[in-house]
Image (tube, rainbow, N blue to C red):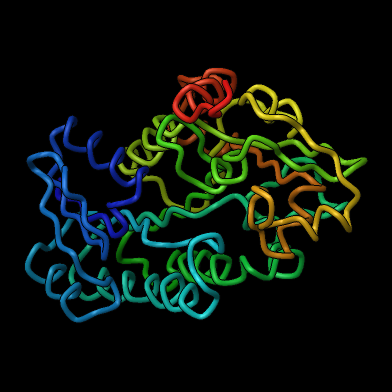
Length: 309
């Protein structure tokens, strides 16, 4: 199968490409960022997915499937640019898939789509509404991209659409939103709150994406692995010091004195859990995670030790 991956230069994109190559698939990558040590067999194109050059790649390559991973988070890009990349880029991907005979499109989204709130259900199912729009406005562009991809289920019946909402990733590459929050020697928490955090090892995340491609599932699926872990336990297992703070002080210190830089909307995610039910994905694909939460955290800790350790 010929598979095109927008966003291939991300760490998860790298892992997905490597697993596809190992299974004998052809891999074509599109990304504005280079992948200088890409394995032999990956056809790389350093272009913006929104540009005409990207459409030319679709037209010439005629991929059988597309795995869209070219979205960014609030931690990496300014608000205006995020909207252009996440929503504009997602629309461009689906337009090109529609125009050039792609048979299967996978949109790789995030479980934070559901948002965190004091009255939210403990486990979110796929039909739960996207409360992140109101509780975490900085995620609005990712929610919009997810919803746009979901509309392809009825708008574009000529190809199979799969929308994956995947939990946080953690592992030795040290990349991702959760890894960024745990990077410093001290992990601040808000007094009186210890939310559950749900994550998977990077290798299992890549496995789940490849499995969704191979099974050619249609629809929206939550993707989760090990059991969720309280934030305080997660931080201590990562070798960090947990620092409880009053909410006002927590907010004031963010981005200063070595504390992680978070937007205001992220406060709700430090107070309340976002936990998803991945039963539908497991039933549709047979997916079982291979790396538990303890090993995932310890691999992150060992790959990114603190200087005093």
